[in-house]
Image 1 (cartoon, rainbow, N blue to C red):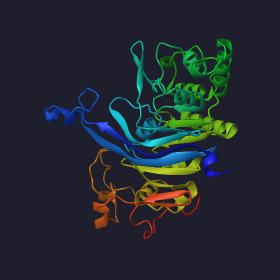
Image 2 (cartoon, one colour):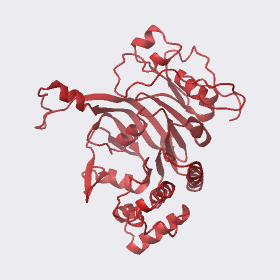
Image 3 (cartoon, rainbow, N blue to C red):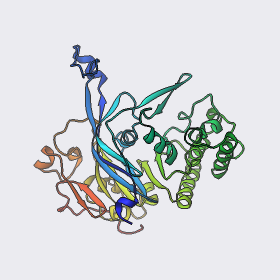
Image 4 (tube, rainbow, N blue to C red):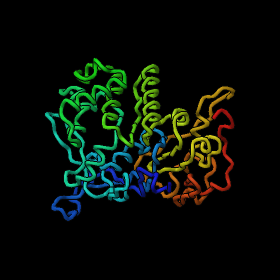
Length: 368
């Protein structure tokens, strides 16, 4: 099987800009017409040339600090951005179907007072692919549900939209999925606000797997859960991935969690992927100083003290000329401060650092 045969999801050179409402208000002047008969707002680059791929049956974790652009990149890849963000370039390939990330945009559908994301109506093939073959776990397991519809009704929407199943068959499939996540009785007729956060996340997992997806996007699925509930959801994810052979993108700020769960890890910093490598290789032999910093901040048996990354991350739309990590890096040179680093690509790995071939960084020598 070739790499192209096994790749189910590929993002190439994705760039996203955010609308700077404060700057637009401060200008106090009209801005040029964008050719569509409306004024163009001020936009700032946020995601800068992100590229990655996920193969069949593989778990790729995207790891980074809060507001590093992990979720924004994923929404842009699936054309699910809110109006305050727009993809400006890049391509996305999903199960062999290739689309321009910058073409089209989100359609916001209203159900009562609730705004709901959806891909453009004029791209039926893309909607069909995403709706039938991709499952999503969002960060907010309660707020992601429409409050005045039951869990069972919403969990079956994708099947109703993209299959010819009868209502009875859809209900049976949804109840089976709820049983798999251990919500067989309470889940189907419940409203989200009646569920605990852990139950709502398991219900979302049921909605994701009810269509037997080939790709699952799990965006910080353990956020806000107590340790018991988090362990339960994580065990369910592992079990589903093993049994179904799904590809998975697991978005998290927790490097230790990613290392325990992933085949490969991609490290994101300030809107760029700075290092991508197989999990054991990345943890034992990091090649980017930021990756070394994240590993140094992990508590471990036998480690006398943590080695946290000094300083604070920049705003996502920072304007630094060179490497965005340079102000926090212990190895910065003049070229680092003034020129964005090139990306060195090897077999199954890449790193964006001018000193990637010169540094000897500290990782975890054992235990993986």
